[in-house]
Amino acid sequence: MPSSSVSFEFSSRPRSRPSDKSSGHDVFWHPSLLDPPPHNCTPGLITLLRRALVSQHECGHIQRAVLCTNRAVHISREDFDSRWGCGYRNYMMACAVLMDQRSQDAYAALFKRHEPPGVRSLQSLIERAWEAGFDEEGAGQLRRRLYDTTKWIGTVELFVAFTYLGIPSQLADFVLPRRTDTEPLIDWISDYFSPPDQHEHSSFRGIWKDASAVTQTDRLPLVLQHNGHSRTIVGYEINRKGQIVLLVFDPSKRIRPPLRHMALSNFKWSEVGSVAKDRSGTQKLRQHFTQLSLPRHPKHAIPLSSDSRPTKRTRAGATAVVMSRVKPEVIEVGSDGEAVEGAADDHVSMSDSRNLKEKYQILWFPLHDPLTEQEKDARRVITSAKIC
Image 1 (spheres, rainbow, N blue to C red):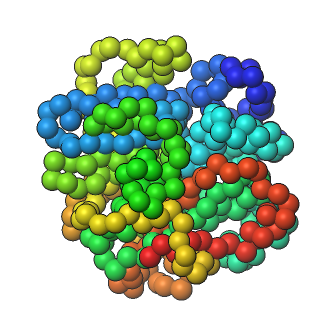
Image 2: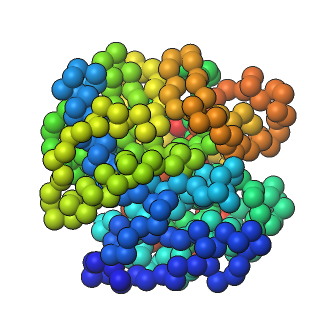
């Protein structure tokens, strides 16, 4: 039973039973539920991360940081989807925070009409969207079959699913000349998380919790796709060198038990407005969070919407790496050495994909009213805002 006045109950498993016996691990949870989260769901990490960032600021390691809502949940892959499930798990993270937000209570009823979010239920949902005429191009590329497969999906497929549900989302595309020239992307992300008086063109209307160096906002996380892997952006920091470091939840990473225990403890206390005071381990906490460190130079912010002509769907490049940190001109593969999913570009082979410009795509939620049937029909052909 949920703790709020809005009732939305789900059965814990999909109706059908996939052949890989994954249904027992495909359980959806969100913070409004009183039931304890499954072992791969960890709420409360944003509160811990904020505390660690405050400590880092006090030590002079960062200038400032901004975080999304503290109701964001990290959902990691399971064994059955460990090599291909990042898109699905990012979908579940987005659903968890959408179910918990209160700007649009009507979203809960939209989710309730379908099976609870999960890997296999999302596959089934996308197939039903294809049957209804959504994203004919993508359906053809995936041969109109997704359920009970290990096919990779990305932000475009998540857009299709949310549109079919009636939940507004938007895609933003960034095509950059080289890996170190990420200024437009960084400007856009920082503009998204920043208050309106920080950027002239910002459309942000969220509420800042305080004006300290480490700021908590009510903004929802973003889903970023790049190099065949997708992750959920939960904020950013500016280090002492002035570089933006994106803070992300990577579904390919599992939260270690001690950190999860600490997060759950803080999450329970946060329900009554209190936070555990134990500051032990804050120096090591940030090691558990994937970070993308990107160079940025002062410039005007990029607005969330663009006057550029919308572009059709784009797919990620073929090269896939786990990035625990990205320093200027250097990419380090994650220390766990795990392979992650990638999706080949529609028209480019693996051998020449490295010569392409860098492509990034962001999925975000404006929290507008649910889509009407007419608005859903207008989104059957997938378009995105071309920022650069």
